[in-house]
Image 1: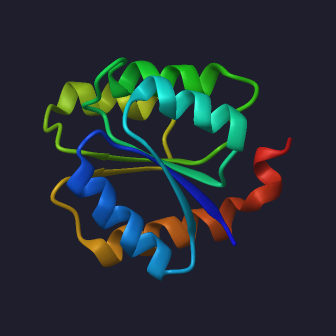
Image 2: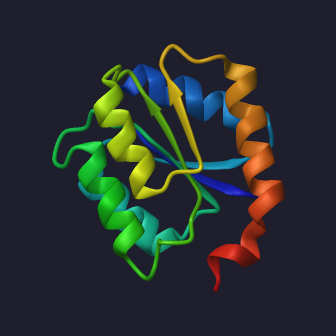
Length: 129
């Protein structure tokens, strides 16, 4: 069973994501800010991270850079799920290396399909390189 880390500060969104992902057979852990999310990613080494960009204690771009620069987390696929609508900011995020960029509101089935595709394409052994 693949493990997914959700880094999301809005508890209602985190609960919906948790429920939907759990119903689709994923083990889910949640962090409510960037600091905890980074620590949990290093400790748990999840199969995939869903990252919100608008976070307390470290904005999402800063968190993303930290995850990509860490030997412990640099190979973990990341799906950005954000309400941020700024195209220049989006470009910066994509340049840091994410596997998918989705804007809120998102289509739930599209998110699940995107996650399944990424996990099937990259698989667990990719992150263990």
